[in-house]
Image (tube, rainbow, N blue to C red):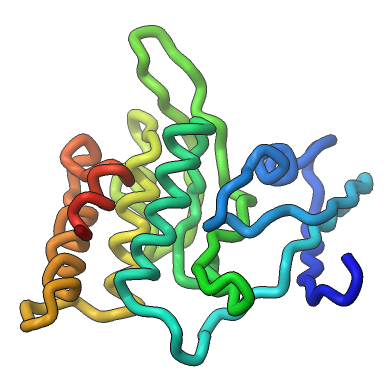
Length: 200
């Protein structure tokens, strides 16, 4: 890794091969922090990621923030069949070197199982209070990747407030996007692909 600045993260290990490492090793996308190295021991595991910033000084916009994470979610949901499970401001970091936002922390991520009829549901409470979708809070019939869309809506709301109409087109598009992401019924929320279209 030469003189590259990195972040070393150590977490408790509750299984042989942590699913976070398994999923990260499959991720190859510009808006997901790449796994540079990992170490697994009986009680703990460690991952090494590029050094990222939480609050960059200039060079980015609200729209880029939303678009970058939507692109990461589209890749996870459509290409890998994975839900992140814990979208929140703390898990979105900025790469000054690359000039883009990246998704981190796949500790709650889950590979969506293929079930008869094309239904893909997972169960159990996951995520962070205040950013959990209603169906996770209630946890009665399982849920799918739509929980990530709700959590992104809450994240945008917390980071930027509730957008109101203004003369800036992108701000108005963001306001409409947040409204759609926070729809209570999961099947009525836009997918990541659809949400990207709403930002155009």
